[in-house]
Image (cartoon, rainbow, N blue to C red; front, top):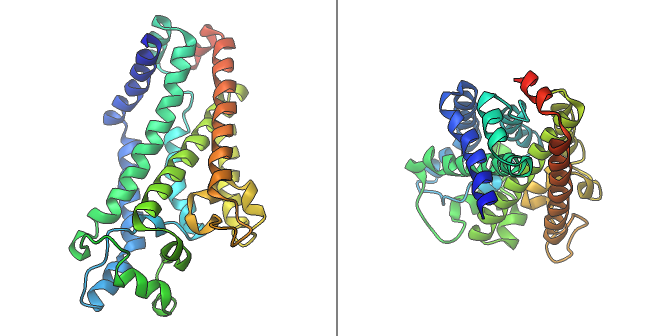
Length: 284
């Protein structure tokens, strides 16, 4: 229990440093701009239809492969300075076991991912609040955009997938999109952390995760290739429901994410255990 508390303290200490990290604030502002740019057409359409839309915009926000890249990039910039070693972290490391400190760093990666995607989901509502009414179903506005050619004619950036509307309830779509996004973000963070600490450079991790993000756009039209593209699993229209497509199933995706998390976490903990403390101090 004590080791868990120490790990949480290590993770929270990284979160507290956000208050003075201007890069974090700039990325949050850019994310708000992205959300506004890619959802404003839905609000405009709601206004033209003289009715409000439902608040369930998040599951469709980055169904487009190129928009997905934009929403993944801020996480890479947050994680890019892994393994997050500074004078304060060295002090914590000296006062606790390396395993607890490393676990805290891993918890921080997933806390960051959860906070980021919760922020994105919240902004889809907050920035369009004038045109939103709470309703249990998808609503007429999203239904019209999904099952008509209005989106094609108007050239809306966000694609309202008929697949998602048909096979998921709003609550299911919101939850699974958030969960899969958080898991994907955490895995990307683990990859960056593992690559950086093993290679002793801070460019290797960015290159590896950048490749995976670009890969998700490159294989967007290939159902079989989606099985090997972790970033593609963040959007529900690229998952199989009821064996109707050749896309990976949710069960497969959750199992794959879990396996990657376990393997990468073990690699990171072992690497931290073997890393010389003097080298860590020199890196500060």
